[in-house]
Length: 434
Image (cartoon, rainbow, N blue to C red; front, side, top):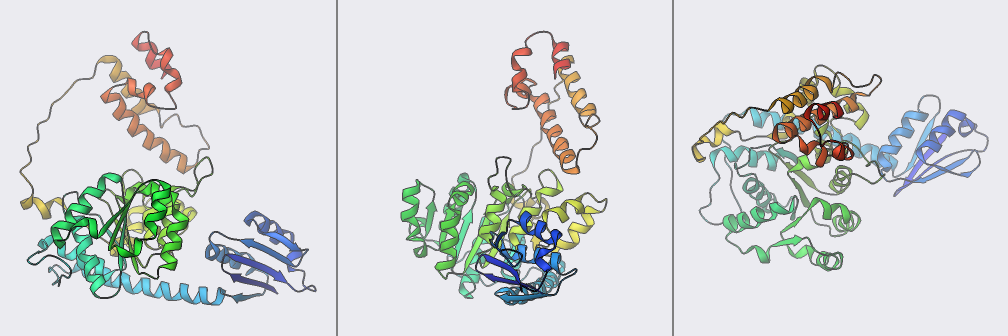
């Protein structure tokens, strides 16, 4: 029998001296790959795991095949919590779809906002959705009022006692709208209620001591990544129920866990931080800017415990299938709302489109045609689908560079920058080099 126990981040795999389970070469190789250290030969392995829950499920899968397993410590509770989370997820799926299918505008009682403030009719469903579904996505178009909808939902949740504090992570340029719209809908000065957590390391350390005094905290993706550990400590120690919002959530589109240099990606940092929040929300007008793999980190941030799209590997297999749109849609449809252009048409100024056709010169057109027709066709055999997707994405960028100014390919691109000194002669020679 193999015993697996957990205490905090420490995981211990052990067996009795008379048992040969940990002498099995396959099991030993698996434990070594996972990073376990052998404390007692053939009897006890230990590890301090960054993601204990995920590792425990891997251990269960490894030993469940041919060994009897006993789970101790915090693991039985972990399994019970996971089972409850899956049941809740299924219930929220039904609630979310029921709300989205209802064509009537829901009645919403607002709290904490200035007297006389009213939501637009098209904003009401997204606010109701945010209040109903604990981990929600708002994919409305720019200008539809995603910030206002989020504030309205936050103050309803605060009135209900479900949330104490709103923490927003976004680009630095988003701070302005969050501050001005706070004043507009609450009638309060932002300086006394909203904290901009963006400064030097020393100043940020002092700021964290006052976190609990603010309704709203604004910070950037880079700051949140740099201060991941102290922020997680605040989430855990403050006892506050936090709604964590990612503004322009497509900025965590990378499906990768680490960068080429071995550092944790921004996406993974946000997922780890989100695991400590009470509720989560993502805001983006373009949740799928390029490829299907842009979506995994955003959805996993929302539901880190249930991982609706599966592991990274499972999702990459899913998006390689022909019916990816249907499969992904069936999983995530309940968790998002979107205000589209047709909803806000009356509130937008009349658009005037003036199209100006500009002909490419002969050399520019040759470069364009070469990239458009040959880049994908000439991908070496044996490349993974992930690599093929990267090349397709790169092709779109290259084509935009060419129609704007072909020199961007060699002056702004690290792959081609070494060619810049060579491209000074005739145009056709430049095409051949590129």
